[in-house]
Length: 256
Image (cartoon, rainbow, N blue to C red; front, side, top):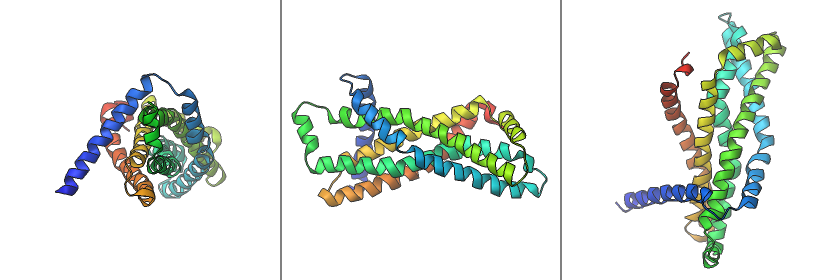
């Protein structure tokens, strides 16, 4: 019973943190320098690993699907499969998981260390709102940079798939591009960006919550970091399913 009560209190605190963080984005003072610093940390520093992973995922997807579709004489539609899979699903999920590994863990560890060393209390003593200073700035930076990383992941995955389609299956780049243009529609981009925004909120708020509500001193910081990463990845995968179902019903242009 105590565990259930503690869990319910934790859920309430989490949603209260989200509300305060969004309110802090539009309420002065505005910490623009901190936002730009977090944008560089979240976006620019995550770019190399997003480029690498998305390119190879696109190549693997094209390679596997190409051989499977060749049995039915349908390998010419590799571009269709690769582009729809990446834009609708793999691009947002892949970028979110990569960023979670880098940013979610780092955020939980950094804020947890600040709590343990009483830096958060010192900020309050100086009349500085730690939620606005530490959480709102990270949330805003994540909402800007993570969707951009998803766009990069989509493009690089499609390019990687195009390389395999051309070099392994003899599909011309012009035809590959044509199948992609015919397959994708505006609704696909809307789905990709909607997922990117939702995942951004999950990544940044769970990392911040785990750090700010750390318990158990320095040992608790390690537990909070692990908890933040595991919980975020699980929620990304679970919410991806429900977002897909909802968006497929809301956006009729997504139907095959």
